[in-house]
Image (cartoon, rainbow, N blue to C red; front, side, top):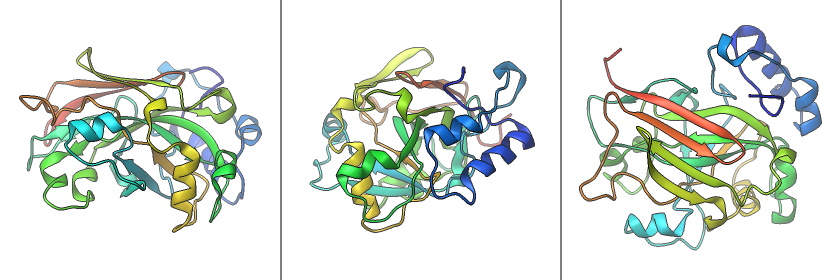
Length: 265
């Protein structure tokens, strides 16, 4: 990635990222650029761009066509669930099919990274709290997700949260609500949508979340997935050993991950 992004590579990069996120009240584009770290991408092993975000707060059913394909109603308010940082997978890292289920599904998404903390943030001020954007693949174990009415188990299996490869600063994305999202499985397009289709935009989501919890610098908000997931197909299609899943978001790059079985190499 060029100067629009950041690569986390080894302890020096992690230390520098810690300086960005720790002990500051505001993370804006200027502050990030001042701390920019440049590496030859081919010479480093990538980590998630924020390896230990304070919170990962995901949005469910935020695309009407996805709700329709899943046979779920469109909610009048945002549907929110939590992911744990331990589930994160970097660019090129392995997504793991767990031994207890083979219903592992993809969900390509735009991720919003918070830069300015706050509580009770109004919709008009929401974008002021965004530092950057990235790509998220909200990989889900479907049978565990649908066992109950809340999503925690199905969304928090080990090695199920690809995130990256870069952070792209807010001012380098003129309109985050007009970005093409394309997910490819072994090179085949399985999802094609646009963030303009989101039912709840970024300021609305920030306003909603900040009503019940303080947002912190470094929080990650995956904004939901468009139509085209695997479990809604006939027959259903799930990730398996040897697959390669790639999510491309316009202006943000491509997040690519191989798939392996638990216990595999």
